[in-house]
Length: 466
Image: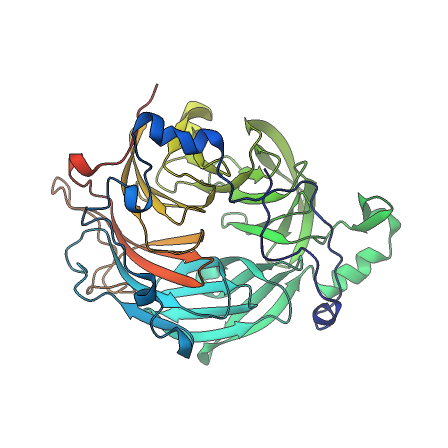
Protein backbone atom coordinates (compact mmCIF):
# COMPACT_ATOMS: atom_id res chain seq x y z
CA UNK A 1 0.00 0.00 0.00
CA UNK A 2 1.77 3.18 -1.12
CA UNK A 3 2.26 6.47 0.57
CA UNK A 4 0.08 9.21 -0.82
CA UNK A 5 -1.34 12.43 0.52
CA UNK A 6 -5.12 12.24 0.15
CA UNK A 7 -5.63 15.95 -0.32
CA UNK A 8 -2.96 17.01 -2.77
CA UNK A 9 -1.85 15.87 -6.23
CA UNK A 10 1.82 15.60 -7.10
CA UNK A 11 1.68 18.17 -9.88
CA UNK A 12 2.66 21.80 -9.32
CA UNK A 13 0.93 24.77 -10.89
CA UNK A 14 2.95 26.43 -13.65
CA UNK A 15 2.18 29.90 -12.31
CA UNK A 16 3.69 29.13 -8.92
CA UNK A 17 6.65 27.32 -10.44
CA UNK A 18 7.45 30.36 -12.56
CA UNK A 19 8.26 32.33 -9.43
CA UNK A 20 11.16 30.01 -8.63
CA UNK A 21 14.54 29.69 -10.32
CA UNK A 22 13.26 27.13 -12.79
CA UNK A 23 10.23 24.97 -13.43
CA UNK A 24 9.80 21.35 -12.46
CA UNK A 25 7.90 18.46 -13.92
CA UNK A 26 6.03 16.10 -11.62
CA UNK A 27 5.43 12.47 -12.34
CA UNK A 28 2.76 10.24 -10.90
CA UNK A 29 3.42 7.40 -8.50
CA UNK A 30 3.03 3.85 -9.63
CA UNK A 31 0.55 2.47 -7.19
CA UNK A 32 -2.64 3.65 -5.59
CA UNK A 33 -4.74 3.19 -2.48
CA UNK A 34 -5.55 4.96 0.73
CA UNK A 35 -2.83 5.22 3.34
CA UNK A 36 -5.37 5.38 6.11
CA UNK A 37 -7.09 2.05 5.52
CA UNK A 38 -6.67 -0.46 8.31
CA UNK A 39 -5.19 -3.82 7.48
CA UNK A 40 -7.12 -6.88 8.62
CA UNK A 41 -4.18 -8.12 10.67
CA UNK A 42 -3.83 -4.82 12.48
CA UNK A 43 -7.48 -4.32 13.26
CA UNK A 44 -7.98 -7.80 14.68
CA UNK A 45 -4.88 -7.97 16.82
CA UNK A 46 -6.20 -6.28 19.94
CA UNK A 47 -9.65 -7.86 19.83
CA UNK A 48 -7.96 -11.26 19.66
CA UNK A 49 -5.33 -10.67 22.29
CA UNK A 50 -6.48 -7.85 24.54
CA UNK A 51 -10.19 -7.61 23.89
CA UNK A 52 -10.15 -3.83 23.25
CA UNK A 53 -8.00 -1.69 20.96
CA UNK A 54 -5.25 0.45 22.45
CA UNK A 55 -6.39 3.88 21.31
CA UNK A 56 -9.07 6.46 21.86
CA UNK A 57 -11.74 5.85 24.43
CA UNK A 58 -11.11 2.09 24.48
CA UNK A 59 -7.49 2.44 25.62
CA UNK A 60 -6.56 0.88 28.97
CA UNK A 61 -4.69 4.12 29.61
CA UNK A 62 -7.80 6.29 29.21
CA UNK A 63 -8.40 6.64 32.93
CA UNK A 64 -4.72 7.21 33.70
CA UNK A 65 -3.32 10.64 34.58
CA UNK A 66 -0.90 9.87 31.73
CA UNK A 67 -3.76 10.03 29.27
CA UNK A 68 -5.00 13.50 28.37
CA UNK A 69 -8.06 14.04 26.21
CA UNK A 70 -10.00 17.28 25.83
CA UNK A 71 -13.03 18.33 23.79
CA UNK A 72 -12.08 19.33 20.27
CA UNK A 73 -14.08 22.53 20.53
CA UNK A 74 -12.03 23.52 23.55
CA UNK A 75 -8.82 22.81 21.68
CA UNK A 76 -9.85 24.99 18.75
CA UNK A 77 -10.76 27.98 20.86
CA UNK A 78 -9.37 31.13 19.37
CA UNK A 79 -8.78 29.64 15.93
CA UNK A 80 -10.66 32.49 14.26
CA UNK A 81 -7.78 34.84 15.00
CA UNK A 82 -5.17 32.58 13.37
CA UNK A 83 -2.59 30.67 15.35
CA UNK A 84 -3.48 30.51 19.01
CA UNK A 85 -2.11 28.82 22.10
CA UNK A 86 -4.57 26.99 24.29
CA UNK A 87 -3.16 26.24 27.72
CA UNK A 88 -4.79 23.45 29.66
CA UNK A 89 -6.28 24.77 32.91
CA UNK A 90 -5.41 22.70 35.93
CA UNK A 91 -3.07 20.47 33.91
CA UNK A 92 -0.36 18.65 35.84
CA UNK A 93 2.45 20.73 34.36
CA UNK A 94 4.68 20.57 37.40
CA UNK A 95 3.99 17.00 38.44
CA UNK A 96 6.41 15.34 36.02
CA UNK A 97 3.65 13.12 34.67
CA UNK A 98 2.91 12.77 30.98
CA UNK A 99 0.32 15.36 30.03
CA UNK A 100 -0.95 17.70 27.35
CA UNK A 101 0.25 21.24 28.12
CA UNK A 102 -0.86 23.24 25.09
CA UNK A 103 -2.38 23.34 21.62
CA UNK A 104 -1.44 25.56 18.67
CA UNK A 105 -4.28 25.91 16.20
CA UNK A 106 -4.35 27.46 12.75
CA UNK A 107 -7.04 27.20 10.10
CA UNK A 108 -4.63 27.93 7.25
CA UNK A 109 -3.64 24.36 6.50
CA UNK A 110 -2.88 20.80 7.58
CA UNK A 111 0.39 20.31 9.46
CA UNK A 112 2.78 18.15 7.44
CA UNK A 113 6.18 18.76 9.04
CA UNK A 114 7.79 19.81 12.31
CA UNK A 115 11.30 20.50 13.56
CA UNK A 116 12.40 21.62 17.02
CA UNK A 117 15.66 23.08 18.26
CA UNK A 118 15.88 24.40 21.82
CA UNK A 119 13.07 26.89 22.39
CA UNK A 120 12.22 27.13 18.67
CA UNK A 121 9.60 25.09 16.84
CA UNK A 122 9.21 25.19 13.05
CA UNK A 123 5.92 24.08 11.49
CA UNK A 124 5.23 23.41 7.82
CA UNK A 125 1.80 23.07 6.24
CA UNK A 126 0.02 22.87 2.91
CA UNK A 127 -0.40 26.66 3.02
CA UNK A 128 3.27 26.94 1.94
CA UNK A 129 4.05 28.80 5.17
CA UNK A 130 6.81 27.92 7.60
CA UNK A 131 6.00 29.36 11.02
CA UNK A 132 8.45 29.74 13.88
CA UNK A 133 7.42 29.46 17.52
CA UNK A 134 9.47 30.39 20.54
CA UNK A 135 8.30 29.08 23.90
CA UNK A 136 4.89 28.38 22.31
CA UNK A 137 4.49 31.99 21.16
CA UNK A 138 4.57 33.00 17.50
CA UNK A 139 8.07 34.29 16.77
CA UNK A 140 8.39 34.58 12.97
CA UNK A 141 7.09 33.28 9.67
CA UNK A 142 8.40 32.89 6.14
CA UNK A 143 6.80 31.62 2.97
CA UNK A 144 7.94 29.82 -0.16
CA UNK A 145 6.50 30.86 -3.49
CA UNK A 146 5.41 27.30 -4.26
CA UNK A 147 5.32 23.86 -2.78
CA UNK A 148 3.62 22.23 0.19
CA UNK A 149 6.16 21.88 3.03
CA UNK A 150 6.67 18.15 3.51
CA UNK A 151 9.92 18.09 5.49
CA UNK A 152 11.93 20.43 7.72
CA UNK A 153 15.37 19.95 9.26
CA UNK A 154 17.63 22.32 11.18
CA UNK A 155 21.40 22.31 10.68
CA UNK A 156 24.48 24.35 11.61
CA UNK A 157 23.30 24.86 15.17
CA UNK A 158 20.06 26.43 14.03
CA UNK A 159 21.72 28.81 11.61
CA UNK A 160 20.12 27.21 8.56
CA UNK A 161 16.74 25.62 7.99
CA UNK A 162 16.15 23.29 5.05
CA UNK A 163 12.67 22.53 3.75
CA UNK A 164 11.53 19.86 1.31
CA UNK A 165 8.52 20.63 -0.85
CA UNK A 166 5.79 19.06 -2.93
CA UNK A 167 7.22 20.72 -6.05
CA UNK A 168 10.43 18.67 -5.82
CA UNK A 169 12.68 21.48 -4.56
CA UNK A 170 14.71 21.88 -1.39
CA UNK A 171 14.93 25.41 -0.06
CA UNK A 172 17.56 26.82 2.29
CA UNK A 173 16.70 29.56 4.77
CA UNK A 174 18.85 31.56 7.14
CA UNK A 175 18.00 33.81 10.05
CA UNK A 176 19.26 37.35 9.58
CA UNK A 177 22.06 38.16 12.07
CA UNK A 178 20.65 41.54 13.08
CA UNK A 179 17.01 40.43 13.01
CA UNK A 180 16.52 37.14 14.88
CA UNK A 181 12.84 37.07 13.89
CA UNK A 182 13.57 37.52 10.15
CA UNK A 183 14.36 34.66 7.77
CA UNK A 184 15.65 34.87 4.23
CA UNK A 185 15.78 32.25 1.51
CA UNK A 186 19.45 31.93 0.59
CA UNK A 187 19.30 29.06 -1.86
CA UNK A 188 17.41 26.32 -3.66
CA UNK A 189 18.65 22.80 -4.38
CA UNK A 190 19.72 22.20 -7.02
CA UNK A 191 21.21 25.63 -7.66
CA UNK A 192 20.18 27.36 -10.85
CA UNK A 193 23.75 27.48 -12.21
CA UNK A 194 24.20 23.75 -11.60
CA UNK A 195 20.87 23.07 -13.26
CA UNK A 196 21.82 25.08 -16.36
CA UNK A 197 25.33 23.61 -16.59
CA UNK A 198 24.03 20.08 -16.21
CA UNK A 199 21.31 20.57 -18.80
CA UNK A 200 23.89 21.10 -21.56
CA UNK A 201 25.03 17.47 -21.51
CA UNK A 202 22.64 14.80 -22.83
CA UNK A 203 24.32 12.22 -20.60
CA UNK A 204 22.95 14.03 -17.53
CA UNK A 205 19.37 13.14 -18.41
CA UNK A 206 17.76 10.00 -17.01
CA UNK A 207 14.57 8.29 -18.04
CA UNK A 208 11.65 8.84 -15.64
CA UNK A 209 8.85 7.32 -17.67
CA UNK A 210 7.71 6.56 -21.16
CA UNK A 211 9.34 9.06 -23.50
CA UNK A 212 10.17 11.32 -20.56
CA UNK A 213 13.52 12.29 -19.12
CA UNK A 214 14.84 14.66 -16.47
CA UNK A 215 18.17 15.85 -15.11
CA UNK A 216 19.57 13.51 -12.51
CA UNK A 217 20.44 16.35 -10.10
CA UNK A 218 16.84 17.33 -9.39
CA UNK A 219 13.85 15.51 -8.00
CA UNK A 220 11.02 15.18 -10.46
CA UNK A 221 8.37 14.55 -7.79
CA UNK A 222 7.70 15.59 -4.19
CA UNK A 223 10.56 15.68 -1.70
CA UNK A 224 9.08 13.52 1.05
CA UNK A 225 11.91 13.41 3.60
CA UNK A 226 15.27 14.91 4.61
CA UNK A 227 18.11 13.68 6.80
CA UNK A 228 21.46 15.24 7.66
CA UNK A 229 24.79 13.56 8.36
CA UNK A 230 26.53 16.12 10.55
CA UNK A 231 29.86 14.31 10.56
CA UNK A 232 30.17 14.36 6.77
CA UNK A 233 28.16 17.52 6.13
CA UNK A 234 25.87 15.64 3.76
CA UNK A 235 22.15 16.14 3.22
CA UNK A 236 19.98 13.22 2.09
CA UNK A 237 16.68 13.87 0.35
CA UNK A 238 14.13 11.16 -0.46
CA UNK A 239 11.41 11.60 -3.04
CA UNK A 240 8.32 10.08 -4.55
CA UNK A 241 10.41 9.77 -7.74
CA UNK A 242 11.91 6.60 -6.12
CA UNK A 243 15.36 8.12 -5.58
CA UNK A 244 17.38 9.56 -2.79
CA UNK A 245 19.96 12.23 -3.52
CA UNK A 246 23.11 13.25 -1.68
CA UNK A 247 23.99 16.93 -1.33
CA UNK A 248 27.16 18.48 0.04
CA UNK A 249 25.96 21.37 2.17
CA UNK A 250 29.28 23.26 2.05
CA UNK A 251 28.81 24.14 -1.64
CA UNK A 252 25.19 22.99 -2.27
CA UNK A 253 26.31 20.43 -4.85
CA UNK A 254 24.42 17.27 -5.68
CA UNK A 255 26.99 14.49 -5.41
CA UNK A 256 24.89 11.45 -6.20
CA UNK A 257 21.43 10.23 -7.13
CA UNK A 258 20.44 6.67 -6.23
CA UNK A 259 17.44 4.89 -7.72
CA UNK A 260 16.67 3.15 -4.44
CA UNK A 261 13.21 1.60 -4.70
CA UNK A 262 10.42 0.48 -7.00
CA UNK A 263 8.01 3.04 -5.54
CA UNK A 264 8.04 6.30 -3.59
CA UNK A 265 10.76 6.82 -0.98
CA UNK A 266 8.84 7.84 2.14
CA UNK A 267 11.68 8.08 4.65
CA UNK A 268 15.46 8.35 4.75
CA UNK A 269 17.67 8.21 7.86
CA UNK A 270 21.43 8.76 7.91
CA UNK A 271 23.02 6.84 10.79
CA UNK A 272 25.86 8.14 12.93
CA UNK A 273 27.58 4.75 12.75
CA UNK A 274 29.49 2.90 10.03
CA UNK A 275 28.45 5.24 7.21
CA UNK A 276 25.01 3.63 6.92
CA UNK A 277 21.88 5.13 5.39
CA UNK A 278 18.40 3.59 5.71
CA UNK A 279 15.52 4.12 3.30
CA UNK A 280 11.87 3.10 3.56
CA UNK A 281 9.49 2.96 0.63
CA UNK A 282 5.93 2.50 -0.53
CA UNK A 283 7.16 -0.70 -2.18
CA UNK A 284 7.19 -2.25 1.32
CA UNK A 285 10.95 -2.48 1.80
CA UNK A 286 13.52 -1.06 4.20
CA UNK A 287 16.98 -0.98 2.65
CA UNK A 288 20.45 -0.35 4.06
CA UNK A 289 23.11 1.53 2.09
CA UNK A 290 26.79 2.05 2.93
CA UNK A 291 28.43 5.34 2.11
CA UNK A 292 31.87 5.29 0.52
CA UNK A 293 33.79 8.50 -0.08
CA UNK A 294 35.37 8.63 -3.52
CA UNK A 295 37.53 11.69 -4.01
CA UNK A 296 35.23 14.68 -3.69
CA UNK A 297 32.13 12.59 -4.23
CA UNK A 298 30.26 9.69 -2.68
CA UNK A 299 29.14 6.24 -3.72
CA UNK A 300 26.31 4.49 -1.88
CA UNK A 301 26.16 0.74 -2.27
CA UNK A 302 23.24 -1.48 -1.23
CA UNK A 303 24.12 -3.51 1.84
CA UNK A 304 20.95 -5.48 2.58
CA UNK A 305 17.16 -5.38 2.64
CA UNK A 306 15.87 -5.46 6.21
CA UNK A 307 12.18 -5.75 5.41
CA UNK A 308 10.09 -6.82 2.45
CA UNK A 309 6.32 -6.77 2.84
CA UNK A 310 3.11 -5.97 0.97
CA UNK A 311 2.31 -2.80 2.94
CA UNK A 312 4.07 0.55 2.57
CA UNK A 313 6.88 1.63 4.87
CA UNK A 314 5.89 5.13 5.95
CA UNK A 315 8.46 6.22 8.55
CA UNK A 316 11.96 5.50 9.86
CA UNK A 317 13.85 6.70 12.92
CA UNK A 318 17.16 5.77 14.55
CA UNK A 319 17.33 5.87 18.33
CA UNK A 320 20.06 8.33 19.38
CA UNK A 321 20.79 6.48 22.63
CA UNK A 322 21.17 3.03 21.09
CA UNK A 323 21.83 1.84 17.56
CA UNK A 324 18.26 0.65 16.99
CA UNK A 325 16.37 1.33 13.75
CA UNK A 326 12.57 1.55 13.79
CA UNK A 327 10.23 1.47 10.80
CA UNK A 328 6.52 2.25 10.75
CA UNK A 329 4.16 0.80 8.16
CA UNK A 330 0.71 1.42 6.75
CA UNK A 331 -0.51 -1.76 8.50
CA UNK A 332 -0.01 -0.05 11.88
CA UNK A 333 3.05 -2.10 12.88
CA UNK A 334 6.51 -0.96 13.98
CA UNK A 335 9.48 -3.22 13.19
CA UNK A 336 12.92 -2.69 14.69
CA UNK A 337 16.48 -3.91 14.18
CA UNK A 338 19.57 -3.69 16.39
CA UNK A 339 22.93 -2.70 14.94
CA UNK A 340 24.81 -4.33 17.83
CA UNK A 341 23.28 -7.65 16.77
CA UNK A 342 24.26 -7.30 13.09
CA UNK A 343 20.97 -5.62 12.23
CA UNK A 344 19.01 -8.65 13.33
CA UNK A 345 15.25 -8.22 13.55
CA UNK A 346 14.34 -7.41 17.15
CA UNK A 347 10.58 -7.74 16.93
CA UNK A 348 7.33 -5.92 16.18
CA UNK A 349 5.51 -3.28 18.26
CA UNK A 350 1.72 -3.39 17.96
CA UNK A 351 -0.17 -0.38 19.24
CA UNK A 352 -2.11 1.20 16.37
CA UNK A 353 -5.25 0.27 14.46
CA UNK A 354 -4.31 2.27 11.36
CA UNK A 355 -1.17 3.36 9.52
CA UNK A 356 1.87 4.60 11.42
CA UNK A 357 2.64 7.95 9.78
CA UNK A 358 5.58 9.23 11.81
CA UNK A 359 8.19 8.22 14.37
CA UNK A 360 10.43 10.12 16.79
CA UNK A 361 13.02 8.96 19.31
CA UNK A 362 14.92 10.43 22.26
CA UNK A 363 16.56 8.84 25.26
CA UNK A 364 14.97 5.46 25.86
CA UNK A 365 11.67 6.54 24.27
CA UNK A 366 10.19 5.97 20.83
CA UNK A 367 6.97 7.72 19.81
CA UNK A 368 4.68 6.70 16.97
CA UNK A 369 1.97 8.86 15.43
CA UNK A 370 -0.82 7.26 13.47
CA UNK A 371 -3.78 7.73 11.17
CA UNK A 372 -5.87 6.45 14.11
CA UNK A 373 -5.28 9.93 15.67
CA UNK A 374 -3.21 8.63 18.58
CA UNK A 375 0.42 8.72 19.68
CA UNK A 376 1.95 5.69 21.39
CA UNK A 377 4.84 6.26 23.79
CA UNK A 378 7.19 3.26 23.89
CA UNK A 379 10.13 2.69 26.23
CA UNK A 380 13.03 0.45 25.41
CA UNK A 381 14.51 -1.56 28.28
CA UNK A 382 17.26 -3.86 27.12
CA UNK A 383 15.71 -6.01 24.42
CA UNK A 384 12.12 -5.37 25.50
CA UNK A 385 9.70 -2.54 24.68
CA UNK A 386 6.67 -1.47 26.69
CA UNK A 387 3.92 0.97 25.76
CA UNK A 388 3.94 3.53 28.58
CA UNK A 389 0.98 5.60 27.44
CA UNK A 390 -1.31 6.51 24.56
CA UNK A 391 -1.79 10.21 23.86
CA UNK A 392 -5.13 11.24 22.39
CA UNK A 393 -6.65 14.60 21.56
CA UNK A 394 -6.12 15.09 17.84
CA UNK A 395 -9.20 14.91 15.63
CA UNK A 396 -7.21 13.94 12.54
CA UNK A 397 -4.26 11.71 11.59
CA UNK A 398 -1.01 12.52 13.40
CA UNK A 399 1.32 13.36 10.52
CA UNK A 400 4.56 14.46 12.20
CA UNK A 401 6.38 14.45 15.54
CA UNK A 402 9.29 16.32 17.08
CA UNK A 403 10.85 15.68 20.48
CA UNK A 404 13.25 17.64 22.66
CA UNK A 405 14.57 16.77 26.10
CA UNK A 406 13.08 19.19 28.59
CA UNK A 407 15.55 21.45 30.29
CA UNK A 408 15.29 22.85 33.78
CA UNK A 409 14.40 26.41 34.55
CA UNK A 410 10.65 26.35 35.10
CA UNK A 411 7.49 24.56 34.10
CA UNK A 412 5.94 24.42 30.67
CA UNK A 413 7.36 23.77 27.24
CA UNK A 414 10.20 25.78 25.93
CA UNK A 415 12.18 26.27 29.13
CA UNK A 416 15.77 25.83 28.10
CA UNK A 417 17.72 27.49 30.80
CA UNK A 418 19.93 25.29 32.95
CA UNK A 419 20.49 22.16 30.94
CA UNK A 420 18.69 18.85 30.48
CA UNK A 421 17.00 17.23 33.43
CA UNK A 422 18.99 14.03 33.57
CA UNK A 423 18.02 11.63 36.35
CA UNK A 424 20.44 11.42 39.21
CA UNK A 425 22.23 8.13 39.57
CA UNK A 426 20.21 5.79 41.71
CA UNK A 427 17.49 8.39 42.32
CA UNK A 428 14.92 6.74 40.10
CA UNK A 429 14.00 10.19 38.74
CA UNK A 430 12.35 10.27 35.34
CA UNK A 431 13.69 11.99 32.26
CA UNK A 432 11.16 14.40 30.76
CA UNK A 433 10.68 15.46 27.17
CA UNK A 434 8.66 18.03 25.26
CA UNK A 435 6.85 16.43 22.33
CA UNK A 436 5.21 18.31 19.47
CA UNK A 437 2.64 16.53 17.33
CA UNK A 438 1.33 17.92 14.04
CA UNK A 439 -1.93 16.70 12.56
CA UNK A 440 -4.18 16.94 9.56
CA UNK A 441 -6.67 18.53 11.98
CA UNK A 442 -4.59 21.73 11.45
CA UNK A 443 -3.24 21.79 15.00
CA UNK A 444 0.05 21.24 16.80
CA UNK A 445 -0.24 19.83 20.29
CA UNK A 446 2.45 20.19 22.92
CA UNK A 447 2.97 17.37 25.42
CA UNK A 448 5.21 16.73 28.37
CA UNK A 449 6.26 13.09 28.27
CA UNK A 450 8.03 11.17 31.02
CA UNK A 451 9.95 7.94 30.60
CA UNK A 452 8.65 6.76 33.96
CA UNK A 453 6.28 3.80 33.93
CA UNK A 454 2.67 4.24 35.05
CA UNK A 455 1.13 1.72 37.43
CA UNK A 456 1.24 -1.86 36.26
CA UNK A 457 -2.52 -2.06 35.79
CA UNK A 458 -2.46 0.83 33.35
CA UNK A 459 0.46 -0.39 31.30
CA UNK A 460 -0.13 -1.00 27.60
CA UNK A 461 0.80 -4.08 25.58
CA UNK A 462 4.31 -5.44 25.96
CA UNK A 463 6.85 -6.71 23.50
CA UNK A 464 9.25 -9.24 24.93
CA UNK A 465 12.26 -10.62 23.06
CA UNK A 466 11.99 -14.06 21.62
